Every structure is written in structure tokens, then in C-alpha cells.
Image (tube, rainbow, N blue to C red; front, side, top):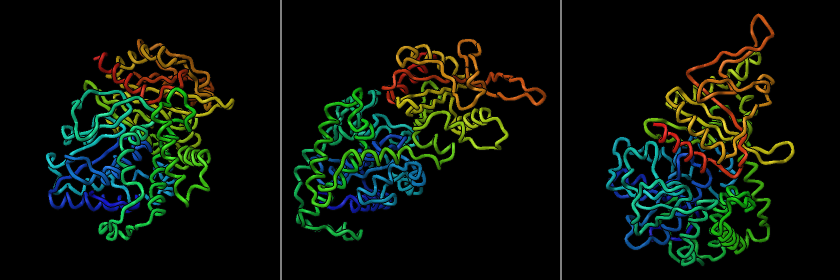
Length: 462
């Protein structure tokens, strides 16, 4: 046992110290990391897996301590307001999380790859800066995305689980459930590590149940968000239902939580916090839930946004007299240039005035990405039930018609506004960037399904 039963807060503090110690002493370390979007599911998957695995390490574990790593810089936690809502239930705060900033403490004394083992949750292939050094050090996977086939089938003693599920956290719950049960009821072990963090280990069953309830609520948050409180029939799998039932049983065992537990209110509070992005600026909204891939030398970025394009267009700022559409397209181009993107997509989700759940899909491509964008558009038209879409927030956009630009055309031209000498509307076609926006008829398809389609198109167009 690397860490005796204690609070999640004490465990996270201990993990921070464990990583720092490994860096300073060139010691071994096991890191559990979610994907680059660092969404709620990645957070809770990595924390839950690490916490229980550190309490009951498997025989042959690379190290007895498993450290959960949030795959972003600490400063970017503020872009995820739902985290703060969950933290309150788990009795932790942002300062307790291990982030890329902690890993970068190793800049002067970098962790030798042979001394690091990675377990991936909520993805099955390392991307970004971590992949450059540690791609060959992945020794376990728990994920619900398409299998990218980069990790061998034998990962013992860690699992290799890639399975369709509403939430990756549900698969983690199933994976660690027997281990969690084996230490249920607490332990009389004293925690010197916990005392060092200012959190004492307590031999008290009610306290242990309180700690379990805190962790259970944190895990439950992402499952409920990813499955719309188990109402998204196209997403919910048996593992999700069983995980919710099990986690709720943990909550109801806690004297402090049982009487006041209300799952619907809990879900609504987390969901409301997630959608509270009004105070964020344009770029932060795009960065909040962003993933990036490279295929055949082409870079793809996809941002998920919980508001319609109409909202985004109004967020670009600038002088009120300036054309919002021009500012929007210019801002997107700047965002792409900063990240060297060939193709960029924005996937929005929102509820219409008639209370229908809807999705928009905006795609912008450089000239080198035209062919791939066209292949995607042709293939996805049927699978995603894409419909040409006008963004009604700007009157000018509402009147636009598709402009024929060869195989890849746009109904969202780049530089478009009122003539300085006439009230007539005019278009200036940009042959460097091309873009298109659709209404996505199949709202069951999220980035988890759309990004693989785009990546497939990038491979086929090469």
C-alpha cells in the first residue's frame, strides 16, 4: 500500500510530493493521465484510478504510487468552471491537482523515460508534448474512444480496456471496484504522509465513508455530464448505469451526505457550471475544450463549445462599428496560425428556442487542407446528416448563399461587410482559407465520433 486510506485532498498532496521526489532523486514514477482537452471525464478518470490503485497496487506494479496528471497547465483550470463546482463536493481545490506545471519542474533534471510508466485514461494514444518523449512508455489504458492501435495488447499488470461507453469514468469504476471494496470500512493505519500534508488519517468508519462519498461524487459528476444524467439513450451503456448505482451507494453510506443527496439537483448544478462561459473571452472559449491531432503532416484542431455560433460571433469583441463576421473569421485564422493548424473545426451544442438539443459544425481549412475538408464533407454529409446552415445572429450571414469555389465551397466567406460607398452588400472571396458551417442532424455524434471521421479524411486525401 503506497497510501493508506485518507481523504482525496491528502492523496493529491501526497501525489504532488511524490512526483517532486521522483524528479529530484531520479526515481521511478507511474503517471495516470487523461487527454489533452482535460475535460471533467479525464480529470475524474485519472484521479479515481490513481487513488484506488495507490491504496491497492497490483502485484508487479511499476511503482506503488499512481500519480494523476491533469494534461494542462495550472493556469488553464480556470477555463473549466465545472471543476470548481465538483471541487466543493470533493473537499479539494485547484491547488491540489498535479498539472503539467508540476511535471515541468523536471526541466533541469528531466525524468528519464525508462523511469516513467504511463496509464492512459479517456484516450488510448499520447498526443502533444508528452508523446514526444514518453509515447513508448504507455503501460495501461482505460478508454471509450476508437482504438488507434498504437498500444500492444499485453499491458499487465495494468489493464488494456477500450470499450464503448458514455463516460470513461464508468469503465474506471468497473476496473477498480473490487479493489475499492477490499479496503472499504477503513483502516487503522496511521498516515505519516497525510500528517505531513496537514490531513490526519483517522480510524473512524464514518470518516472513511465521508471520504468515499467525496470521491464518489467527483466520479459521478463526469458520468452524469457525459450521459445527460443517464437520459442520453444513444450514449448510455450498462457500465454507466452500474457505475452510477455503485457510486450512489457510496454516497448513501455517508451519514453526512445520505440525507441531503439529490442526484438531479447535483447534475443540474454541475451542468449549469459547465455552461457558464459568459465571462470568458473568445480565445479562452475555444481553448476550454480543445484537442489537436496530426495526420500525414496536416494538423487538425477541434474545439467543443457549449453555446451556438451566434454567441461566439458576439464574443469576438472589437469596435462595435466593425463587422462581426470579419472579426470572427480573422480571429479563427489567428487561432489556427498560432497552433499551425491546417484544418480547424468548432462543434457547438445548445438548446433551441423550441427546447430541441442542437449541434452546429463549423470547419475552416487552409489551401493545403482543401482536399481533406472536401473528403470529410462528402463522407460526413450522410453519416452526420449535415445540412447547410446560416447563422442568424448576423443579418448578413442569414442572407448568404453558397459560393462555388471548386470542390470546397463556403457559405461563410471571409471578408464580408458593407461597402464604404454603398449600402450594397459585397463579398471578397479568400482563396487562402475556406470555410463552411452546417447544422448537424445527428446530434448523437460528438467530437468522439466526428474527429475520427476528419482524421480518416486527412489520411485518404493525402
